[in-house]
Image (cartoon, rainbow, N blue to C red; front, side):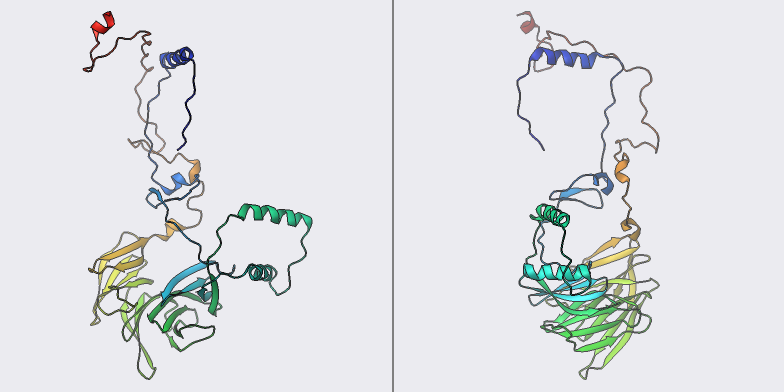
Length: 384
């Protein structure tokens, strides 16, 4: 909102201009109220501390802090889990697990890493030309106010050609990494404090599983949501370290994307039921402790991307439609008149307006009668 300071202007030209503007016949317009309620309506604007929801609501954005920056080859963060004060990150596209450190990397280390990434080897970057130096100075000037990360990252494990979509921690001394692979999906247990190449156990899943989307630890094992066969497995390890894998939920859906149960101090199920959300038809299933399963809700969208169970047992579902998130969905939307009058008109049709010329506005009375509080002319004041 911009406030303008008042300025002194001659009164007579203003009155003349006003009279001219209201006395011209045939130029009257019909006022309309336009409502913007789609994401694309706001796309041409620049947001400063605000955000637009999928329903078209303009709201204050959450305040954020840049914690860390991953190496440039990792462009996706799939999961973040905090274990006993330490934060672990599952990144991709090719699977890797990082731990956040207390301090960001030194500037010289970051610069050396940038040179290695740019050249693909350990050789330093080529000597820059004067033009390159000028361009770099200009870029530095534009980004000198950019937020710097408050913490650094340490690589714990990497899985070339595979993905890590989920991290979990049933106990403070164990980090469970869910590795998705076309060859062999598996759960890997890493002792904490985690160090690179440290590993305590590996549990492979059956051949039909290609993706592990979610893992929900239990007291004696874990429930594992998978795709593309839409199954939930129960993985159990005995005292001798032997593992058994059984199917507890077999759905006609392609993927089971999320699992949720009543929250506990640790990320461990101690009470049932457990709820599972799927894609294809967006079905929510319930899994009871005795192994009974049944669908409990069919959502309007094709994907149940996340579930949360409150302490009182209320289940909250976050749904999605991948078609609405496809790249380029909003391209060109800003070039169209996406607002609409209150009385919606069929596409391509103008609102109905009265036929003929607009009625001629009466001329302004240069000496109008004062009005009393009841709206009637005050004759006595006028006569006076």
